[in-house]
Length: 323
Ligand SMILES: Cc1ncc(COP(=O)(O)O)c(C=O)c1O
Image 1 (cartoon, rainbow, N blue to C red):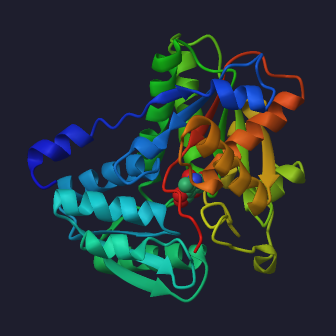
Image 2: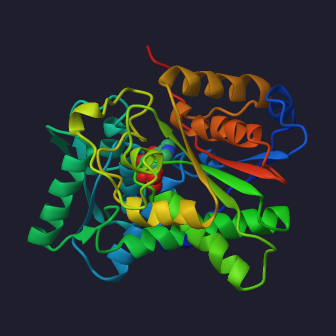
């Protein structure tokens, strides 16, 4: 995977859009074509590849000695992968007690992994501090290079519009910080403003019931992020990518939800695992349970009777059976 040629090829990541006809039937969504934007096709299995490759390329271009971020696992694995490809040092901060942190994989790619005694937000804070102190490239959500993450996730909207021939009626996105959601919304907004699509999709957020700042703020009807007591947040092997005391892009994400006529739905771990099992059994797609929440959210959204066209769920890979 080393070398300039392979890295420039990967700069144009794109993923398939699968029609989920059988699952749609099972979920009684026949009147609205259901699709999965299959981010599991990315080299490290999630949409985090998109931000990671852009940040690592920018760090390389601007001559930074290292790239750093805090992660619950997927983003760190992606950063480590592209850092190896571009021959940039990666320093990844990971909460010590997280179960799906993909640490072995990051180390295999040559990244330095710093275990953190704390939550995801502590890992991000320590990484951002190290970036300031050592003049490393800060690839953290909500950090100085956030625009790069948003631009890379906005490509998802461009791909979907090209694959469907228009924007879908609604797109459902698994949410932790809300970075992906904001990027996708901005992509669709731009497409609409350019006259390339006939609508801006309704943005549907799917997340954990235990707990997420964005969901808590939305439930209170607040477009400003509300404070969430850390004691309310319970991370598990299923919800780690979604649990957030602070959703680092909550402000913009709440605006995107509000402006698009969107909704937020929260799910228990068992529901997400069941949805992942159904996706595998019925469509042969091996999804990460946290990301299968996006399918459940579309089901709830459609049950309001407001769906009027294609529904797209963003789904990522890396199914890990619990031993
Ligand atoms: C699989 C998966 N889904 C969703 C998310 C949440 O994405 P965001 O923080 O952009 O909202 C993450 C974050 O790492 C993730 O790994």
